[in-house]
Image (tube, rainbow, N blue to C red; front, side):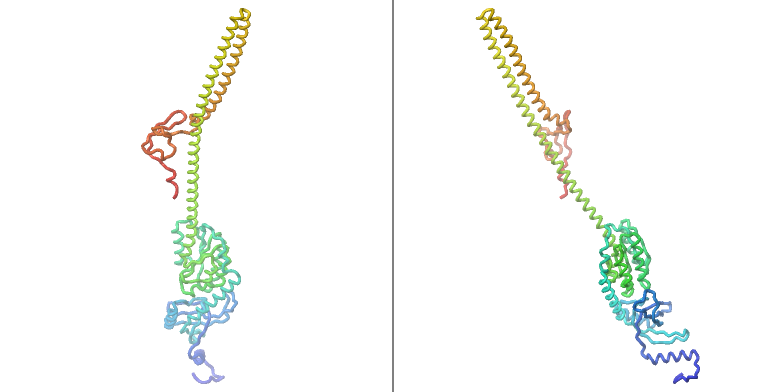
Length: 473
């Protein structure tokens, strides 16, 4: 059918469909480039790919219907060419729901369904990556302006974070790797899991909700993780909802998203950003390990300090015992000297008193013989009085000497080594009588005699132990 259609001409449905196809071919002979967001993508077994290319309002809420939509089909032959283009860009993008793309295609009208569709023939990966970078930069500026980039970094991390909340796709390789790391550590971790989609249009809202839910379950740390993928596979972790949920979380958030070179906005707002999910799990394990090492270090310091205190106390006790022994020996010598001196004074006093008495008796006898009977009587009377006074004086001297000797004996007994031994002390001498004051004064095989309160103990040294050898260097 060609030419202008008359106003009264009636077309069949097939003819109308053909006119529409011709019209589209004439209007877009070389195809058209269209940008939008992929939605509802499917990949049936035929090898073709079907999706809607939609445009959403700039301030639309997640899940809001688009303001415009066009159906897109990528046939199997064209798909190979599109994949080759993506591969040349390092497989940085993957066609998935929520990914912003710029594609080229031919507009076509599908008669069987009465549907206008775009037959995709090419893709512009740079447009997608540029859009991601632009969105990321805008979001980072907004978070910085709100003071949220380092907020979660200030959340207190428990010294022993054994209660771990996992926000990830349960059953994924990343999930299995993290559980393996936690289990093989040997620590008693308690894991709370929330199975969460990690890509797709609805993923950001679900990830944000999961972070809040697991943090409210009383965990010590939240681990947000996703395995490797293309840059577009990780786009959910560049979403504002996820970034703000991480920043506002009351618990420290450890992230392990993608490969080692990937860096998402969620990483920027997290307490600790790790290169992979496995690295995030290892970071939690290392925190516990560090605490145990600090505990061991403290225990070793306490042990060393205790050894020093005990050694010093032993040294002081040894010195005290030596001082007591020396003082006892000195006191014994002084007591012996005092006792000897007292004995000599007593002997001298007795002899002097006897000499004086003898002289007085002789003088009295002489006077009595000269004076006669009366004088004899007087002399005898005087002699009796003199004898009485002599007896009193001698008794007084003797009592004074005895009291002095008793005081000296009391002091001697107080310093008697035997009494010191009776309080639990002992003295040890070698066979030659040498006093053993330290471990080095005797050797294995030496015979020793130990003096205790009620006798002596003979023994032979089998081994010696020097406390200084147990000290830490």
